[in-house]
Length: 332
Image 1 (cartoon, rainbow, N blue to C red):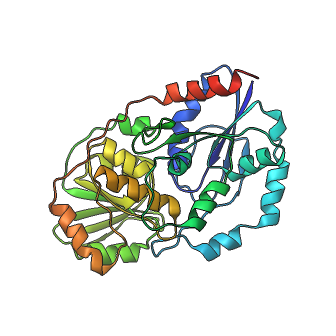
Image 2: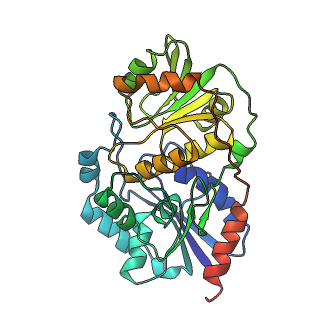
Image 3: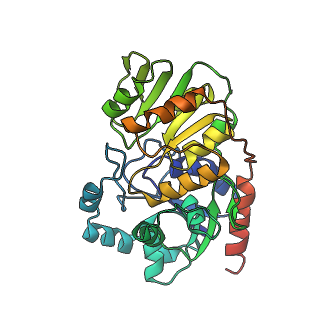
């Protein structure tokens, strides 16, 4: 049986999950090929990738949101169509898709089943928290970006019977948890200058900021800005007093698993992050609207708080993959 595992490469969450799922798939009695599309990931996959595409990536800005203009420019429809048509999707018995548009649309063009194993699937499912302010366009983009025929979702909690708790990578599960004197920060949609300016106004805390924009370590008062690497980020987060990050999925889930105090800032114009913020708020995690001066007191209040959200994220990744393979290969 030939299986294609198609992964979204924008951001680090999908890649983090893939690093745990791929070795599980490789143990199974299947022939596995890997597809990766996207442009803004900081992590590598230590496995051979058969197909690499530019795909359709959302480009992060530096002011707290998605850069829609740059995203539009990058979304070269002729190139994207060429990638979709070049993929020999009919060669595969099963396509497992983690929010990856090239394989999803290749399947749709020939009416072939495409199985979603992703966080985005969970966000769209009934029962998953949604922001109070409706965003029909954001919902439509999330639904149409990588269309699939069957969904298995991951979320912060089991909001639906088809939703599983997060895949926590082994690097995090095996990390030595301590409490030192710093806070870990990862806000890739903000410029280093903006983050530095804001956190400098909270001098009674030490901040370790991981940056997509900077390639060297920079220290300024109580703030250290460093390039993001897998090892350094995990070490910082596992020994932190708390984590300040965007309302993505994997980083907040990992912070919760490590029993760290958490404060999130959802990305502007990003419906998925607004939904994540609603879900985290439901669990008791504080949410900050933006990194503006008027919200500075929110950070100061969070630092003084000892409130943590307790979660139970068992290691069931292999059981989920077994379920996906059993339910979708049994009739082939």
